[in-house]
Image (cartoon, rainbow, N blue to C red; front, side, top):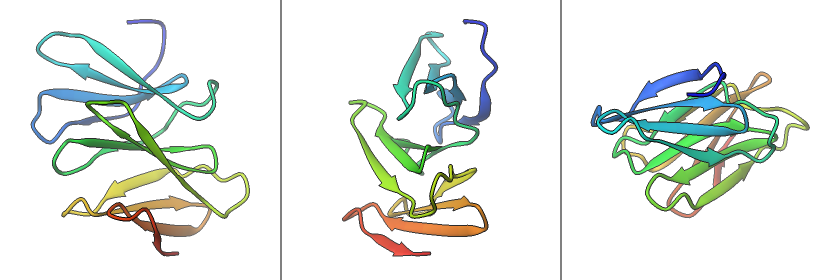
Length: 123
């Protein structure tokens, strides 16, 4: 492990891995193998403060500069959900219990997006 302080550590739903924000990425550690995989953020100099696994463990989300980035844990592909709140970075990001909606809180507001069709549901 490098000289970094992980932020917002969380277990995967199956308990086989943990994830946290580190410098420029979300890092997932496989607890059985101790192998770590990084999922890059928008900016190399940002550290996600909170991360969240989807209920099925297939996706991981984190607040990034001006939005939320959601990565596929297996392929590392991602989709960005933008915030119309200037330079706000979400401090809290959570999946709905069914994994179909994503919510993020930033600067006094809450945004929600449908993960089925990537549309904004509400603010």
